[in-house]
Length: 110
Image (cartoon, rainbow, N blue to C red; front, top):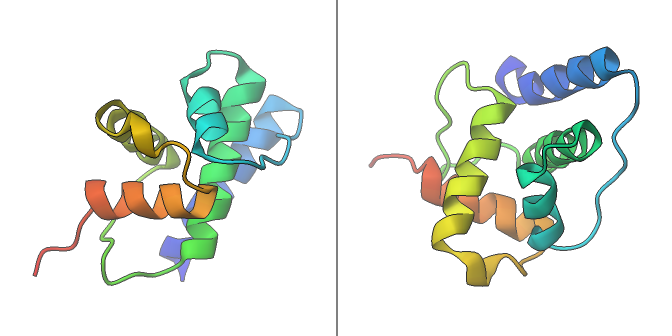
């Protein structure tokens, strides 16, 4: 339970420190990718918040094994690396894209 709440707590803390709320992100993976690549703080906050929300929605999975003590920034880095190899898949919905990144970048070993 704590493990699944950690991304939310981390993002909430980051948003409090930043002093402004991140806007909700709708759309497909292109917008998420653009925000995660951006240098502007507001876009970075939107990226991290969207990743956190999608990870909460995905929940526990037997196909995804995140490292103990992972940080949401690691998920962001995984998304950016994955997008370099799969640019044609950025049109996926946010839930489908995040699930695909997690399954590809953090697979469970059999």
